[in-house]
Amino acid sequence: MNLEMWLTLAAIAVLIALSFLFSGTETGVTAVSRARLHSLANSGDKRATVVERLIERRDRLVGALLIGNNLVNILASALATSLLLSIFGQSGVIYATIAMTVTLVIFSEILPKSWALAKPEQFALFVSPFARLVVLLFGGLSTGANWIVRHLLSLFGVSLARDDSMLSAHEELRGTVAVLHREGSVVKQDRDRMGGLLDLHELEVSDIMIHRTNMRMVNADDPPETLVREILQSPHTRMPLWKGTTENIVGVIHAKDLLRALNEVGNDFAKIDIMKVASKPWFVPDTTSLQDQLNAFLRRKSHFAIVVDEYGEVEGLVTLEDIIEEIVGEIADEHDVEMQGVKQEADGSVVVEGSVPIRDLNRALDWNLPDEEATTIAGLVIHETQSIPEEKQAFTFHGKRFIVMKRDKNRITRIRIRPAEGA
Image (cartoon, rainbow, N blue to C red):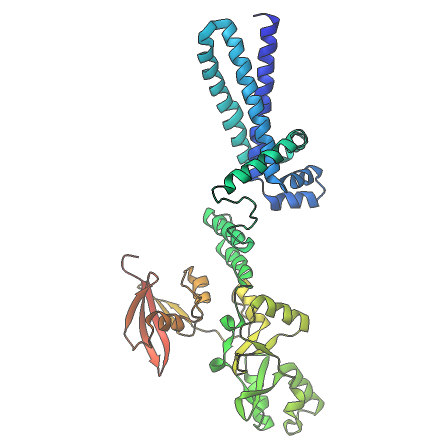
């Protein structure tokens, strides 16, 4: 082989190395985590900042890389064909085709892309100067090529100008957490907390409130001794105060305020004016989202609100703790009354009180019962059956067998749930 042939071989090797960089860079910047890049950029990594800026116009970057990659691949193949033609004659075309196909597939496609997929952040940071140079050289050509592509696709009704993602940011995060949980990288409790946080803007106050039928309240017309005894015996720090009818909420009693007032009058119950101790009630619509209600609680430095419907009728109450529990799960302290709402049976079935929220049951047992049309498990049974079932009636839906165990007037109070046969 003469000097010219050696130079041609060297040029082919350089072009294959460039093809390696083009292919790896394309895969690296496509697979890189933007969150990880943002974190690195904030910590002062200049290469991460470069990559962040480049992927802001991902179509321009990928187009420039594809143009460069095709140029070096075609040039390398042409040089290899010329070299092998001079050595083997006309059969050199076949040898060149086989040799370059194998070489480019291994060293310019599989090897760099496998490396980039295995270590996308590290690879993207490593090739960031190269990627910036490529965009400087071929960015204009890439913009023109993308313009032509968009207009050609528009003829077939396909628009690349639409920036809307099929998934919202919340759905993407939820999907990522679910995948990580399935792979074992995220434990169930962390997945549930992240899911609860993401659900705050979708849920309304009515989904988590304590219904008026379960509210503990005190009557402002009762003797002071009775009022004080009820409040101090209650497991709750705050209690609504009603006058005339339970619909007429006139105040909220805080146990600390009551104890302070008792101390001021020397523990003489008769001297307590409950209306002076009570704070003004705060009424909120039942359609308020949990995100808005959480912000309102923090802004007002309040922990307690009365929930009303569109007609101003009292629906229930909601507390800051209720919203926090949607994120972190049940919070129990030494004064909470433990509710035996869910009980696992030896036969694999679950006995559930009708008032248990569907979301709590899903979180506790890792089920996926729908909670769009009903808040409680009893409400789900009534919604699905479109009736108020009798005791011992059984129904199958959503992969579960529901058996009504107890009914009190028009309320379903206890249900047995087991997996449906064949589910």
